[in-house]
Image (tube, rainbow, N blue to C red; front, side, top):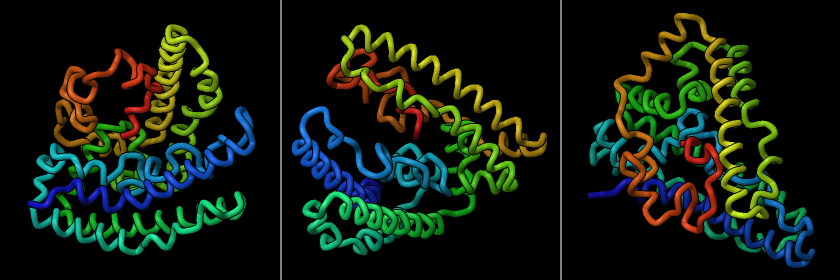
Length: 288
């Protein structure tokens, strides 16, 4: 039986190569400029630019590939072996369009040229991934696609309105889309600066600061969610709620690879932190 893990690997691998090359080349620049200099800055787009940001199923935050790769989601959607095979073939064709030649010599280019080439490759890969996802959506039945949208809404709440397919189903016009986007994006503004310097704090101070930031982010997100939903008409709100479908218990935990209650994926981690004891950034797990 063909496994869906291959599907995600085939589409994500080229993006991982870009990230690795970018990290390696920027690390080299950092060594040349000295510790504490500007050489350690991230490449174009910053963290999460490749595959981690918007551009999932219909342009929303949740990745279609990430969801379809999960066995629980496959079971809910009743994805057949034939569909898995067809989607894997689409992913393979997408991957084959980016051979190793595209990346050769990238790290040897001057920084300005490398950034330009990096951006060119990023755009090509984004288009390739978008085209592949359109074809993969064509493999799913209408019922499967609607159910998948419902799961995205259950995971993301009002942020799912940024998803083009959800917005179309709800009937948002251009003005509403702009207002929703502005409201939801405002909840993240200014937090980048707040995270700077956290690694220089003691563990106890860092945990306290993370908790403080978590509460601030939660308050901001709650406010922005209310502002986004306020844009919808009563009929649109009803449609949005109906799209959710039957609630799935333990959905978020299943996608994180954990058992409900915090076990599974958290095994071996210190409370509130990652494997190395560093607290996780508030909201980082919610971007599924």
